[in-house]
Length: 80
Image (tube, rainbow, N blue to C red; front, top):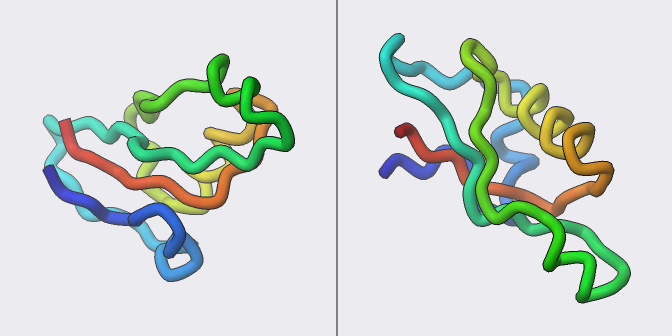
């Protein structure tokens, strides 16, 4: 497992392209969802498969928020 952007330090990863082998896929893990109500966490994914070819961390961040309708405070990325 390679951890590219650890939760809480996403600002250090913004606008960086990740170098990956073409046969590997990314999954967002350890997502820190920004919710007002703790029960909202029950309906949010703990991991999200990232679409093929999406490697820019800012684009991935936007993808996670657009997918769920919730903002987040950070996430990790794992090659699968």
